[in-house]
Image (cartoon, rainbow, N blue to C red; front, side, top):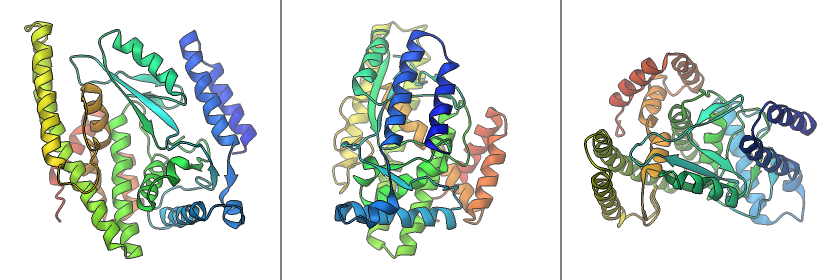
Amino acid sequence: MTQLSQIYLVMLLITTLSGCTTLGYYSQAVSGHLSLMMSTQPVTELLNAPSTPSRLQQKLSVANDAREFAADRLALPVGEAFSSYAELGRPWVVVNLVAVPEFSLQAHRWCYPVIGCQSYRGYYQLEKARKEEQSFIDNGYDTFIGGVTAYSTLGWFDDPLHTGFTSLSDNRMVALMFHELAHRVVYINDDTAFNESFATAVELEGLRLWLKQRGDREGFHRALARLRQRNQTLALVETASKQLEALYEQQDTLPASELRQRKSRVFRQLEDDYRTLSEDWEQAGPFGEDPGNLNNANLALFSQYNQHVPAFRQLIRESDNDFSAFYKAVEALSEQPEESRRRTLAELGQRFDEDL
């Protein structure tokens, strides 16, 4: 798709919307994305240019190898994605806002043309995200704003590489590329947990195979350590979430002050457990070196990206590590009614064993 047709498509989407708030949001989204696309340079030119810094050349060379691996071994629809590069001057491309009611773990959902509803909203400008965040805080919501290293346009555009990718270590950059490319395969409107868990599973299994091919044992062990940290953190989050869900079900019988006190105790315990768990980790865990003040929004976001990962990894195994067959199975799963889909994922997850 040419830049002119990309601009036309984005403007067509925005003109179908109405309302000052909606138009304001999409205006910044359109201008931010087009600014990113218009600032790109072809990777091949940068690789051959003597003026390109050696570190950037090395990163772009690894990225090119990862594109080929993604297409050949992981059967991902790479197309022209990551064939251009943009210098952002910062390690994130957008920030995401997550907002969850005070006594709930169900995130607020924003709905968009074409892609349906999502449990987060992205902003190219931090101050705009904070402005909307304040409106949720004023209404008693728990909120979280986090920098997003990359995002996928689901194949509508040729997504570029940028400093969000190249500021990472090689292995994390490659894993992120696999994750974003996976969104081009299957995407269900209104099911963030399905979409992100699927992409995370492709990221993890893709990185495992990438490192194996390159004989990078140290990188593989570091990746396994990060995976263990993710799984251990997820276990803590699931325990806390069950406690909170049971507590929030008592909204009609307990006063708000009592609910807040008990909620606070659950989160303090989670934070303490995470600090104890992570004190000997050589790498920062999913909540960083110190979790700070966690809330409903942190848990909702973490669960969205990890909830069904074991299920999708099990489905890869049951597809004999044939990614084309795996994607067909995922597509079939995506066509099931939501209740049936979640039941199937739960059954797959129960069969998964990390040590096999």
